[in-house]
Amino acid sequence: MVTQLAPETDIAGNLAVVKARIAAAAEAAGRSPDEVTLVAVGKAHPAGHVRRALEAGHRDFGENRVDEAEAKWPELRAAYPDVRLHLIGPLQRNKVRRALELFDAIESVDRPRLARALAEEMERSGHRADCFIQVNTGEEPQKSGIHPADADEFIGACRDDLGLPVRGLMCIPPQDDEPSLHFALLREIARRNGLGDLSMGMTADFDVAVRFGATHVRVGTALFGPRPPFNRDRG
Image 1 (cartoon, rainbow, N blue to C red):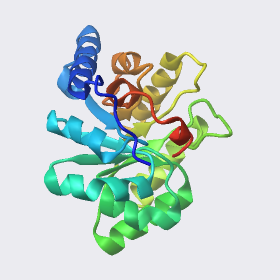
Image 2 (image 1 turned 60 degrees about the vertical axis):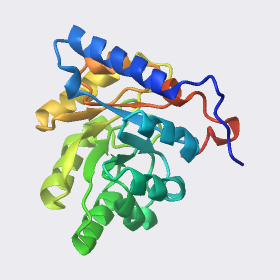
Image 3 (image 1 turned 180 degrees about the vertical axis):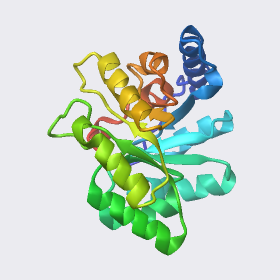
């Protein structure tokens, strides 16, 4: 089933609005807006929606699933080879090879066995991708991510023992919590481990995330509109 984007949805206009909000939040925090990358999340939206953002000049995109990215992105990448694609959803070990062929960044490195599988496939294939360690800042049992108390040891193992190109950290705060508490925690874990990049903040809270040092914000609904109801639980 192909979901049609409502004609009145102005993706180029939405991009301009979101980027202006990022710039305002960055400037309020004494940062340059250039320090923040907007990752446009195309989860569950068809290629035609994403193409509108590409046509408007945007180049950083996020997808939650390897299968969906494989169906959507080869043709788009052929037309726009300077795209950077981020995997922001859970990654199964049996899809590591395919993920490294598709994505420039894996933002959901969340457990030792996955980290080892990534390291082995990078060594075997030569395909390397920036890695972000996903931290489950709320310690939610249903959510992926390493717990904060285990983060330092896991980061060290990924970076020093396995040789993964660990660029930063990622988190998804609990829906009903004050997000700034989680952003501050992630920032502190990154600081003490010498990591410069923080992927945090989504449509509801990206302004706050920028004020707490986010270098990457993952925004979907504010750009593309609500996801189709039958796809909201995917990824």
